[in-house]
Image 1 (cartoon, rainbow, N blue to C red):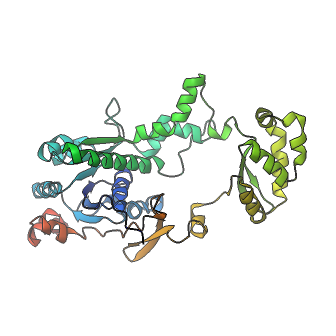
Image 2: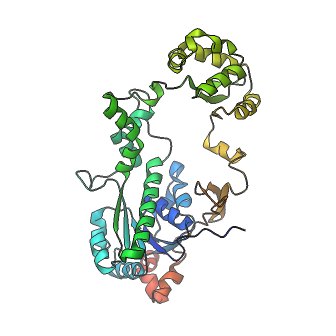
Length: 393
């Protein structure tokens, strides 16, 4: 049996964050073996109470963590948080700088008290003119040009997931791991600041650099200039949508033969890549006609055997019926109150296996007694500093 992969075992992370970017950072570190203690206000992280598309945010990105409630509005709560941070290796937060200063947990204050602490701030922007602006995933997608590139002209669209928040959390975790490695030799921590906007810039960098190199703004992706003969969505006989691509000379020849369009291979007007691309206006309808005469379930094995890139156009819920997603170890189950849910883990394998399970979702303050008790607080003090006494009143 493969030894459990927990390179961050023994590392304590205190996470005081909400929504997605900060919590995802904590989740990634927890997957690697760190103990992640989520500090919540007395009534819990507000993300716990979201509905609709916000409903999965808390359970998904807070799997496997400990929950401690501390009322940082009080002097006792701030003292308790500081005592907890004295035991930590990493502090992850995603609040306004002014709020951190008020609570006494800003980077300058903490690094002076705890020089080995790694301070990871998940912010909307890095230092600069925009550093104090409020940011959301959708805001930075609009600002950076990602929304422009995603929707057709005049209809900018955000990407259909919280891609920037999740990727920003990943960069925060990546930076934390690097700082932990450095600390082994240097003996001191670092102040890390990760920007949601700068993360989005990296996602649109290919389009920025195209402008830099060619001097022209690329059109939105729905209107993009094609670099391949086939790279389109088609419908099969049952009206099922399928994406099919042919991006190499070999794939162009393969799809023509597979669909009975051998005559295109002999056409003197289609003997170069550029000629095939320029002829898309009349070749793609021929491909579409052939695909429309077949069923996807019959085409899929042939496309796969031939090495063609293809996919049905699926909904997220379809993933729970996908053979690859549902293979052993593909999803992990987590407890969430009286419910359970299945969710993906980290997208890599170690020695041929994915890292097992993200763990259960903690109830509000479920670890108060153990963690705060270990810090020397008695039961009465825990009720006070966690805000439980004032909430009950």
